[in-house]
Image 1 (cartoon, helix red, strand yellow):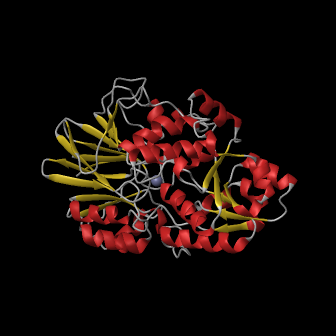
Image 2 (image 1 turned 180 degrees about the vertical axis):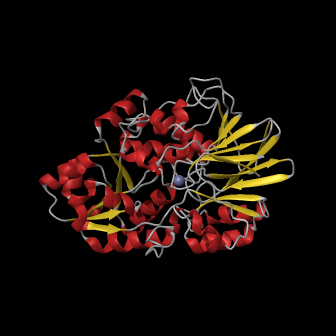
Image 3 (image 1 turned 90 degrees about the vertical axis):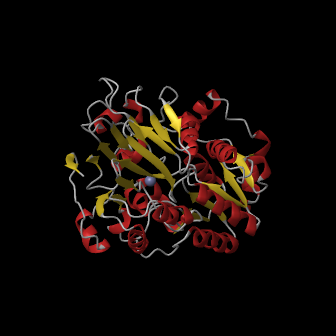
Length: 416
Ligand SMILES: [Zn+2]
C-alpha cells in the first residue's frame, strides 16, 4: 500500500488522506482548512489538494471517499468532487449533510453525490481493499475507519475523544482494531494550552450549566453549536433541572428532528416541554428554511419577544445576533452569557467582544487530551504511528513512545 496525506500533517484540520494499492485508491476525508471558517467568501476550489482524479473537471480515478464526521475540515471539498466517486459516511451524517447543512451560510446540496450509508462495524469492499467503519466519540455519527489490504491493516482515527457519554465507542475502537500495522492518529490538543480543562467531561459541563443558571436570576444567552448533540442534551437537562425554558431557533429544531428520526431515544421537539422556538433569525437561513418547508413545522412551540421580555430570568436563549441585539437594546440590562464552543473562536472573532464582561466559558473539547490519547495508544498497540490533524507531529514519538513513528509532510507519498 501507499499512503499520501495531502493535508493535515502540520495543521489542525483540512484532512485528506489517500491509501492506495496497485489497483485501488481510497480517500479518508476531503476536508478544507480550519481557516476557511473565517473566510467564507473564498471559493472551495481555492482549497483543492493535488489529488488526481478527484474533481468534477477531470476523469474520476479515486475509487471511493470515506468521510469520518460532519465538520468542514473533514468534508468541505465535497461540493467539488467528481460525482462518479462513491462517498461513504454514517447515516446520521448523511441526513445532517442532506437536510441541515444546506440551510447554513455557504451550505451546499449533496443530493447529486453518490452517497452510501455505512453502519458501525460494517465492512465494504472497494477493489482489493476492505474498509470497516468504527463508531467513535466526537460528533454525531462520527467514525474512525480500518483499511485492509494484503494482510496489512491501517486505522484512521478521524477526530476522537474519550470523555463524553459516547466515550465507550472510542475505547471499543482500541479493542476491535487492536494491533494495527499503522495508526493514523489526530493530535489536536497536543499543542493547545487548555490541557487542564475546568470541565473535563460532558457531565461536568451539564453540572456547570445547572449551577450557573440556577443561581443567576438573569436571562442567560448560550452560544453553542446546534450540531453538538451532547451539548444540546446537556442544556436541556440543565433547563429541566432548574425549571428554565430553553429557547432555540427553527434551524436547531430541524436538527432535533433529524436526531429524533435517527436516535429514537432523542425525544421529539414537541415532547420536550422546556423547549420553545423563537422564529427570528438571520434572513438568509429563514429564506432557505421556508423554501425547504421546515420553517413553521413546530409553530405550536413558538415563543415571542414579548413573552421573553415579561420574565427574562426564566429563559436560556440559544444565542442569535438579531434577538440578542433586540433584547439588549430594549429591556435587558443585565444577563449571563454561557460560551460553550472552542475558546479559539472567542479570541479570534470580534463578535464576542461586546459580551465579554458577561461571559462564562462552560465547554469541554471535542478532542482527546494527551493522557487519554496515550492510554488509547497503549491499548491499541500500533506497530507504526502516523501523526495527523496536529501542530505537534514531531512530538509524537516522545509523547506516545511508539518507536516506529512516521512523520510525513503534506503531499509526501510513502510505501507502507
Ligand atoms: Zn471534528
